Length: 606
Image (cartoon, rainbow, N blue to C red; front, side):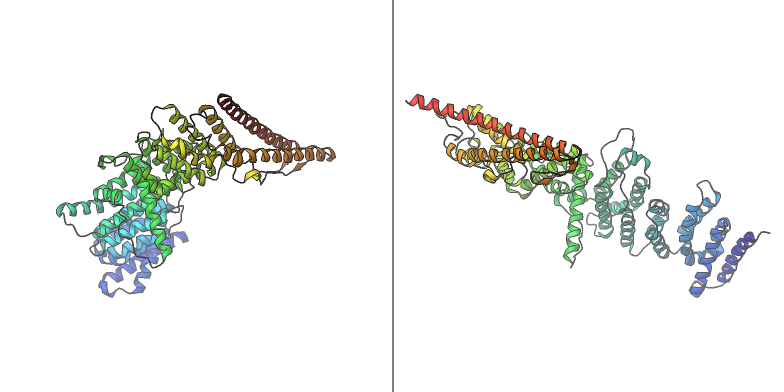
């Protein structure tokens, strides 16, 4: 008989010997040594492929007391062997039956701790498989517990979510379909695991309207809040073509259903209820808790108002402006993030709220709320700093949508704010174009708009027709703003006659010339001279160089550009000169129009 087979039979014999010795003892008489010997012999049986014999021992009625006390020690080797065997292997099936038997027979408290320890110690690659394997026995054990049940359920859910959280959330269609680590499947398995405990809370609430046992309900609420932050806040939740049942959409619906069943959905939405937040002596922990809660509630708002999960439970009595105000806190939370999944959720939530509103219906008083000032500034940061092109474009469209919803005074106030805070010439140019459009509406409509004519407009024009650093302003970097300002001034001169002076531009013309037109002339002359000198130097250097492909660096608008050949540098410099020529031609046209208008008035008066 081969030596390995002898050793395996010896392992079974050792287990039988330990069992026989313990059968004659009372449970209270079991010693630490007995536990160790049982664990070693049981583990050897499993590792040597004698799971069937171990199963017989466990199923033997005579061994009930022994298994109750000692069986939980087999969890670690049992899980290891289950993953070692292939799906169709009989030995794997025997191991699964042993796991089921242990859940039925072991001391619930001991087995509970053994199962959690196994989940905690598993590697990231196997965490989802381990959790899904142990959810059923863990549920069985928790349903048996009498004392500290709510605490144990909460501990289980927290442990599972903590182990899953470091895993990357599948985002693309391919990643979701592959589900490499099993996260999609695992999340939905965890929801099924929680359902008996949700049902218990529901039954207790139905029995008494004054249901006071809040512990289990609080633990389920904590689980839902964690699930909203991870994986749902990070997950792609749009319906994807080719995926019949999107796992994360299904998971989101289940989380919303739990919140509704335990009567926490509406309190969370309307009262911003966050459950029992622990009192942290450490301010850093307090801040983390507050941030996590804000992330979760932001995701909940996205699910309800963009994906319309649970929207049937939502009372349809609120005005669109109230819903926008309610969601602005969460839009701000999401727009401050840099991850694509969160930024896109913030933009979608903002857009969804704005599309519910009529143009010009949002009262200017809303800008007294901090969020209504912060959010457009965050939107500008997305427009100018986000590396993802489609999000930059979308944020620009949403900014325009936001502007369109305000009444005239609101638009006026928002324009002033963005001109002062955006610090980006392209954005400032865009705002100036919007100002021009509002002035046009004021001049062509029958109704008088005091915010884009007269002294209010003059105050706004003072912000627009101005070079930030006078003649020293970097004209290339500020070219978008300067061109928009010149186009606005050209429009005002053409549309508003000196006799009508509805816009007040003729009253403030001297100030415009002093603060804008003259410094712009000086700045253009200085800039052109500087760039022409640079071009001359580059050409001279090129002649001296051995090859025209010599690589150098150049600084434009205060920033060092990537290494370029001399030819490429010259193209950049010529492009800058072309921009200055363009500005100069529009400036000349504006000054010509002003001169013609003034001369015409003088001729009339003479």
